Structure formats: structure tokens, C-alpha cells
Length: 360
Image 1 (cartoon, helix red, strand yellow):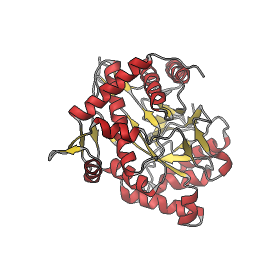
Image 2 (tube, helix red, strand yellow):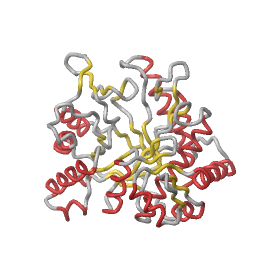
Image 3 (cartoon, helix red, strand yellow):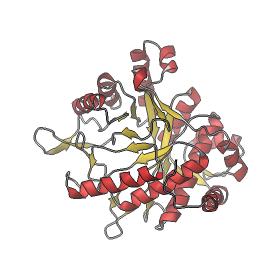
């Protein structure tokens, strides 16, 4: 199939080469000790300040173990989703702290009841393939933040459910919930229907502690997990779109190298939320057309590495469902679709990812 392309094969090779140069010459700050040990044992250079420099041959060796497919498992096997075969895969926007109350129309903090209602809705809507838990849960009991999100989601949606946890303790509790639902730990590992997603790379060129630990933990277990790269042009990445693309590509390769060093052949997604900042105010502007343009560029690089692609797209800076919201969502989704993206995290988010509207 022919998709829209910005770059020739030679230009994609140059982007790849520039990314390798960043990883080998500049490196990245890795705050997680386990990750530093994995990189070091894999042949990378680790200094006392936590800077990891990844040689070209290490990255290219790991690229050879990339696989071209990723599966989102569901409680109902008939609702499993495979990338790229089932593209375009539509996923809800996720983790908004607030919600527009469906009865009053007023913005308020979201609760676990809202998650249950949205999960049920997504389960019944044929246009959505994966439920990425749409909101946080302000009513969560102390120490049960993640359970207050995953339990209502898994109870009410038999499609693939996707989200993350703030720490390893919460992750272990969520996995235990999965074992109970499946009937046993062994049954769960045969069909791991909780799909995990994290943002372990904090632009520019930094790996955090907790999310990186979760990725390592899940990869070692052989459970589904992937990461999203989130450079913000003008603030956490170069102002030029090409510069942001190159840095984001380097960050994707760094995370993918970590995963492949742990378990060669582990499935992954080239997932991004590359955006720009509003240079007049410094505000986060994911609804800008540059988000769509960057997604197109990253999608081309995903095809270069022969891995599934996608990310948060179809977002808006608008706080209401108005013409601005429609234009921003429409332009960027169309751009990503033309470029051949497989995964679309869209639907339900307003106000630069702060507010959920159930579904817009």
C-alpha cells in the first residue's frame, strides 16, 4: 500500500544515522539502576553520573530482533487486536484527571464510577478497539489508586484494556487482579489481557525511575508492554520539527534497545506523542498541526524499522466540543492515517489531555 511520505530512503537513513550519533556520542541520563546494569551488560558505556552511551553496533544488533507485529489481548478472545493487520486501531484517550459531567455539563474530578461508565460504553461501541482507561479516579481509597481504575475497567469492558501504574507495588496488585479474573496465574500468562503502557523516556534524553522499572519488570515476565516517546518541540526538544523527529527517534531506539537487551524479540510499538509548545505562552499545544506532521514523520521511521506505529493523535487544545476541537482532531488524525499509522489514541480528551468528555 502506498502511504504519504516526507522522506526518501536516503533521508530516512540520515535520520537513523543522526539518531545513532546522538546515542553514541551524547547518550542519555538513565536514572534507573537496573536499566544502567542492563545497558552495561549489553556493551554500553555507563559513567558515574548515570549517563549511558549506546554504541552503534549495540543498537543495530537490537534492531535485528524487532518483530513486525503487536497483539492487544482481550478477556474475550474474539476481541483481540493485532497490529498492523487490524489497522487503523482506535483507542480512547487516557488518564485525564477531570471529566465533563454527562448530566450537568460541568467539569469535575473523575471517579471510578466514571471509569465504569466509560468502559461499558466503549465495550458497546464498534468504532473503538481498545479501552485505554480514560480518567484517573479521585475517589480511590488510599493505597488502591490503580485498582480503583483497573477493576471497573476490566469488569465493564471485555475488549483489550490498557493503562499504566505509578509504581511497582501498584503494578503487582494489578497483575494479581488479572490472575484472579483469569482463574489462575498460569491462565493469565496464556492470555495476558491487561495491556501495559508507560512513558519511561522523559525528553530530552532521560529515562526515569518508576516507569523504566515497570517496563523492565514486565519485559522480563514476557507480558505485553510498550512505551510512548513524548518530545515537545521548543521546550524539551529542538524547535525545528526535523530536530524533534531525530531526537524522538533516538529516544525510541534507546527504549527499544533496553527492551531487546532484556528479551530479544519482545514485541513493541513505535508510539509517540511528539508535540510543539506555543512559543507565545510556553503552553503545551498537542492540537497544533505540527503534532500530525511529527506523527507522519515518526510513522515513516516505524516503517523503516518494520514495527507497528501510532500514538496520541486527534487531540485538541480546546476546552469544549467546538469547531476548534473538530478542526484540530480532524487534521491530525487525517495526517496520521495518510502516513499509514496503525494505532490512534483518540476520543474523549479536551483541554490538552486534562479533561475527558466520555467520548467526543
